[in-house]
Length: 267
Image (cartoon, rainbow, N blue to C red; front, side):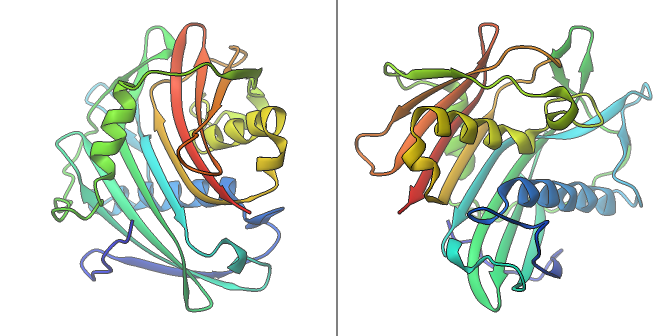
């Protein structure tokens, strides 16, 4: 999708790419999602007049802006390389009373590289561990403009459809992708949302290794849940016969679907 570049509430930053930002196949997706997540959270803090992106509810319990869905569209994946200059233009909008959406346009050396959209909702821990994460509202006034009509290119509606999972799931190959608590969980004790695509890639290498060697062009993830450290996670992968080089995947844990992922890669 193409996001309009508008000035209101924009944040623009540049950095020269190095080994931290680049991976084996272009820009590191793990680094990108972590970085844009931080940008998203800091924009929330700015809108609330806070220096730090730390939020609490009325009881004092920590509240987190957790990913509901992400969309990545990488138009020119080969542009990412050490030494190139990455420019990121970001803006944050209110999608609904409980959800926020941020748009990030990425240029490399002046050429359009990628568009990334993040949708979040505020959550807090429940009594039942990470499987019982629940919606919450942070204290403070959140001064954020509503999303311009159509600015998401229909992604919010598409994500809602994926969330409902209305389409039938065909037979799929499966593999264990149980995450490592010391490397894939964050300081809140949650399986870090930015690491879900890494679990999808791990499954891809196990079940469709030739696809793993290709360049990522599109990724859409809808988050349905989280897990406790040590809980088993299984990936189910099936190819989309109507679109070349696309596969669908679910991440399942103890009878629950915790994410749905659609991935496109190019030769």
